[in-house]
Length: 358
Image (cartoon, rainbow, N blue to C red; front, top):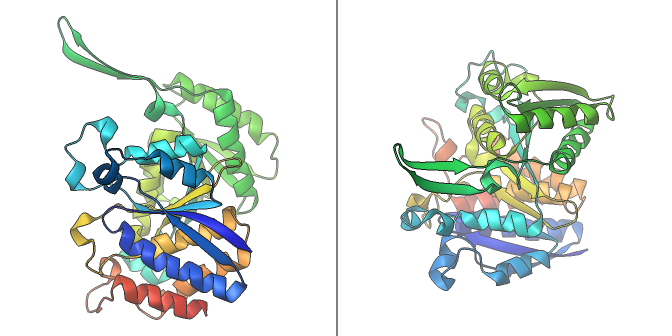
């Protein structure tokens, strides 16, 4: 099979980790008989420097014409003084909107080889940790109307509008239930229905959907309680589904509980558009180009690409097994190297994973 990939190396360590990921893709193609065609485009800070905007129209067009999109990272201190609507990170919002990517899937998986890196006590993690946070991506407060105005007696006042429709809630809810059906058959829907009207609508739609999936256990969880339970008893969760801002916060918390944020991938998907696959870590400009970045999260994002965009389960399994094997052998990049462990670089880690793929 032949596949067209839009590749956005981006900023900071993005080009470093994407380079190794493309080598992994080529190795998978060699083993399974696929050909991947790469079209590199700009987004983020590098796009601002080259074109004056964080998301050129060419990038959108190339992404729309591709089978999937691979992204390294965007942003960095160099562009921190720009106005909010001109920052590199706005490219992500623009891509999600342009491609209709309404669901973000972010696994939080505890790697047995790195369990000691988790900030939680061993007894809390005894049963393992395997959560997927399903975050709604294109609605809510991040896409609502923004206001900033002067008041006669209170100084400057700001307002951000949070809105959700039944249709937006139903489509993300179905994604969560369908995913749970393939996993441990439990959905935890997170909201703030004791305060927010949007959450009360969210809850009513989720209850209706739950009746359509009788084999999936369903529960409502208030967002503040969910934040507590993620550090108290994270093993109780399977699929966690929630709105945009809550999902942004909770997915970061769930990732840190694993102790290995540099190993965790993500997928942003829609109904028909090409999916966007990226690591959850940032651009880390302080180590860019120094052969210190951990490429595993980006490489595992490709495993998600195989699984969710191309429906190539064997290829996804091969990538994940190669990562597991390298970690089992004790190889570590600086971010996950414990005391007494000599770390390896970005290129060496990519080379080892390619070798295990075969």
